[in-house]
Image 1 (tube, rainbow, N blue to C red):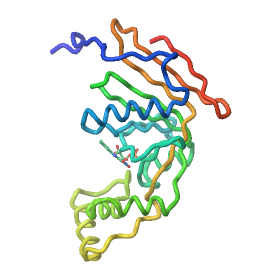
Image 2 (cartoon, rainbow, N blue to C red; image 1 turned 135 degrees about the horizontal axis):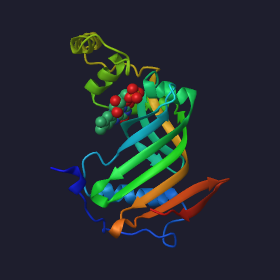
Image 3 (cartoon, rainbow, N blue to C red; image 1 turned 90 degrees about the vertical axis):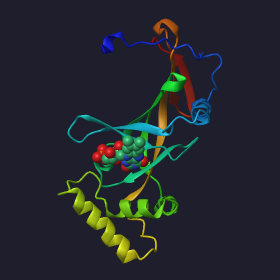
Image 4 (tube, helix red, strand yellow; image 1 turned 120 degrees about the vertical axis):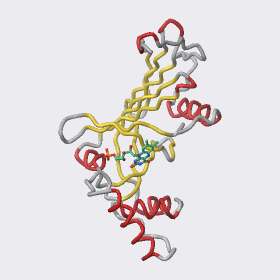
Length: 211
Ligand SMILES: Cc1cc2nc3c(=O)[nH]c(=O)nc-3n(C[C@H](O)[C@H](O)[C@H](O)COP(=O)(O)O)c2cc1C
């Protein structure tokens, strides 16, 4: 099948500067809730973009675990590639795509670690095996084999004897404090709606961009 012949029209909804909320998190909440209500798989998955220490942008999917007026929270290993990139440069991007709703949201912001006690609380709410996996995985470091990982996993499980592992100090949440949002709603004839919010002091300036 020729990829160039694949196309569809977007006509589910529209977005106008006049009708959007003054505060972007309200519009985000509305869009996230609509995505969750559709029960689409991985509606909370989001591409996290960091500025790599080698100068290349790096993108990977993470799962959004909460959001509020303060920002967006996900969890990871602080020693991972993304952890190192954030330590060197906290400017990050988040990129959601909900194809069933013909929508994307792009966010720019600053990442910071949340407190150990908040991370610990979330860590212990995860299934036991996920806790063990997080505890034994030196995320983003080379491993000699799959067996190496499985052996580490089984060894810790046996040592723990069903008690929970400690939340590693290098594992936890990041809060991304947003400074810019772009909401994209697909429209007919490729005349899509793009509404941008940019933070200035404590206010959000709103503008429309050409598609
Ligand atoms: C659906 C999905 C959800 C994921 N969720 C997370 C997550 O919440 N946290 C995380 O650290 N990695 C998550 N990953 C794995 C990351 O995409 C990535 O492989 C890993 O974090 C290592 O990235 P890094 O080497 O750039 O640090 C997820 C991957 C997928 C496909």
